[in-house]
Length: 435
Image (tube, rainbow, N blue to C red; front, side, top):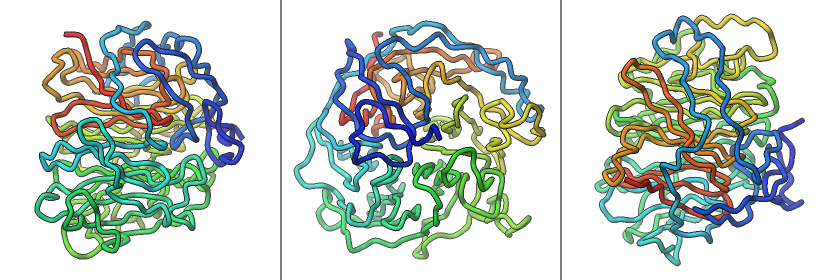
């Protein structure tokens, strides 16, 4: 099965696990030098060559469903625009998969390392002591397993709470809450409270992204449980948390409550009340536009198409993004499929251009006006970075910004809205642009 190939860039034999990647040699880049990577946390499966530029994008011809007629398919440019560059901050991290801030005006950045450590970066240097080390709780042996997500409570400065998502030693997809200690640079490991532990039948497709929405609720992305093609049809099965985007009220002392306006808060249709949206395969990274509240989801595809899903601010939930009836805008395993209630992605690309989408952020920083309002995302396998933006007519335009030599495990955003790119091989790079 293609999802169990070697991960890109020389994966050690001892790390052969249930993930998808390709054995490759990284190309040199004028903007970034990349060290070797370990297994990819969100990869797809086909081998990609990093020594040649990514092929020109192909325009998709699939017709949008009636549910998304107001969201046209994007037009695409064929060449990198050279509008962005990557400035290396640090390159000696251990398989970094996420970076964020605490919203406390401290200037610190917090880096999630796959094996179970949260490190502090201050002024571009790593603090000697980790903020949190829970590696003894985690199974990180599979290429998509480990410590995968981190989110600080919007009131962190007053309550000291933050949340992590990891695959536990028994393989359960686990959401837990922690508290900072009296030392602001050290979390209290004894404060852990597990909010849920979702059993999982395979090592891959664990999701892992956590983010607080503008409504103050915690959104959690779970993959479909793994295997190939969603063998249990979890993406369309609302009785399970797998293959879903959850929306939780974590503001009380209980593990969590169900927001009263969740679409199935009363348990209707045998649906789990935690569910906000469904039909997702592996929503590895998603984000809210800090200016508009719009939600962008990078959902990793199977073996043909990668997609970016979109939910406008103020949406009432219950969106069905199609998996495993569809992959991107295309029927999966069938020439025809019933898809009238499914939401088309705002962008997709095929596996001539990459094999594992890494969702990013809408740029809302102040330093680079040319990037303002553009959603920046990339691909793990090819290292390509694109932007998405609506034109005056409302159509989505997709532009290739850079062919990097990175294994893009994640994007990140600092307190000022400036953007960062993480390379699974150990580096963090700041996104810059010529003005």
